[in-house]
Length: 191
Image (cartoon, rainbow, N blue to C red; front, side, top):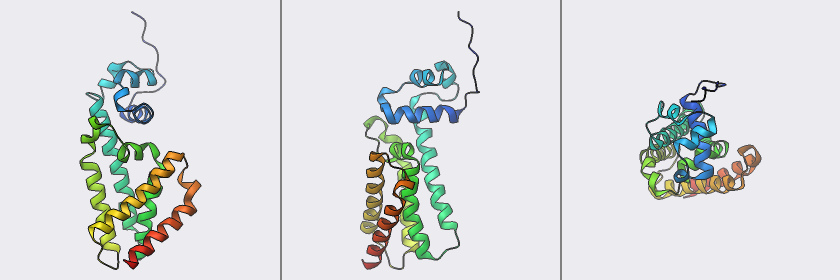
C-alpha cells in the first residue's frame, strides 16, 4: 500500500462543488463520475463520498446554491432605495449580469440538456421565476400579464445564452446589455 500523499489544502464541499461544476459544464453530467472529480482534485473518491452520498446529491447541491445566489442578487436589488422604474431596470440588467458573470452557474441552471438531471432543476427555476415575475409585477406601473412576464424572461435568457455561447463576460457587453434592457423596459411600458 502506497503512503498517503500530503494534500495542499483541506477538501471542503466548496472545493468539490467548484471542481464538479467545471467538469459538469465541460464534459456533461453523464460523463462525470465521483472518481473523475476526485482525480481532478488529487484526492481519493472516498474523500468526496465523505461530503456527498453520490453524484446526484452533488449536482443538486450546485443547483440549489446557484439559484440561491440568483435570488439573493434579486433581493439585493429589490432592497435598494430607488424608484420603482429604476429598480425594474436593475432587475433586468441584474439577471443579465448574473448570467454573464457566472456562466458556469448559468449553464447548469438554465442550459442543461441531460434528461437524467432535469428533475433536479424543478424547484429552483420555479422559485426564481416566481420571484422575478413578482418583481416585474410589483415594480411596473401597469399590470403585467403572464405572457409579457414570460416574454421578458425569454428575452433576457436569450441575451445571456447568446453571450455565454460566445464566451463574452458582462463587462464586455455592458453597454449593449443596458441598451437591450432599455428596449425591453420601453416595450413593457408601451404594452
